[in-house]
Image 1 (tube, rainbow, N blue to C red):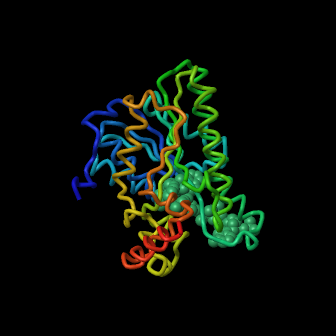
Image 2: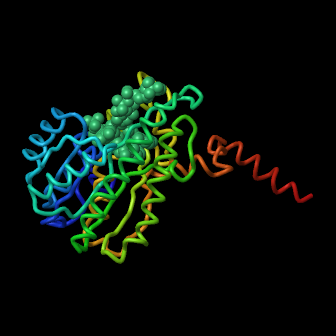
Image 3: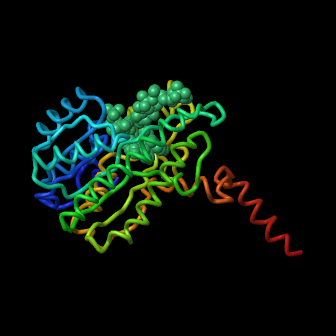
Length: 294
Ligand code: HXC
Ligand code: NAP
């Protein structure tokens, strides 16, 4: 490997002075991105539904990365809760510069086994939650004529392609992608940028326990689905996210940036299944296909 992928990429102080709100920032990828934002000089507000998780995250993140982390219990499905999260951020930091829509719910299931409530459980966290946060923060910025603000959302590659067995998540993430591209244009005049990241497999407890429970992870081997034969390092996503929310990315607006080692393309290319053909078999194929001229 040519670089140490656990290292940050941006220069010191790249996010100095920024206040960044991360939904679901106490665990998994939200936490990893938050830790890097802190190291780059930002202060954070993190929310989730579990107070102890958030409090522990605050203490650990401040100790290891510096900066200040404001933990706040907020269910993003509830607009009034989201307004309270925003109010707490403003009371503590006086402003907010970045919203990272990261909170999500998901699990694998055949769709015909899902109750209406199961669909809603996922769609409400992902789509309604991202809408609630974006609307509350956006209204605040617009009403107060604050510019140079940005919203980054975490979607998935299957927001574009669709996917079996995670249909509520695919529907909801597709909606978040549509929101990103729509508001990138509509709210550009207010000085608010919108982008999204679409990660491939990045191991987290939250995702792996719901998408590859038990020993499914070992049996199904996520690395095999990625052309470069590995899963993502959290720092790789953090590097991309830090760039996208930084002022260095002011010309990035309305992008859905995929970071998946080529995973979705491996599933998409019609002839990709030929990867299993051996060199000897390719020798034969060469002769056979040339011979097809006769
Ligand atoms: C079928 C299920 C279910 C399951 C819950 N339900 N889990 N149905 N299979 N595994 C049903 C319940 O029976 C109930 O139906 C309804 O869904 C609501 O369930 P609750 O447990 O009350 O919901 P809630 O407490 O709101 O929890 C939401 C959750 C949970 C989504 C179910 O898993 C959660 O809190 N997740 C948050 C974290 C998370 O999911 N992280 C992973 C993100 S990974 P009824 O009929 O009674 O209403 C990710 C990766 C994407 O997004 C791409 C990877 C490549
Ligand atoms: P995770 O650790 O389970 O993160 C989900 C977070 O969302 C948790 O902190 C959870 O906290 C919070 N959350 C859930 N429901 C909430 C609600 N109603 N209100 C507020 N917060 C809520 O999983 P992850 O893998 O890091 O996922 C982070 C993001 O990356 C998600 O958007 C996911 O779709 C996306 N993603 C992940 C992968 C991957 O391979 N890991 C791939 C593609 C996309 P509480 O439970 O305490 O509320």
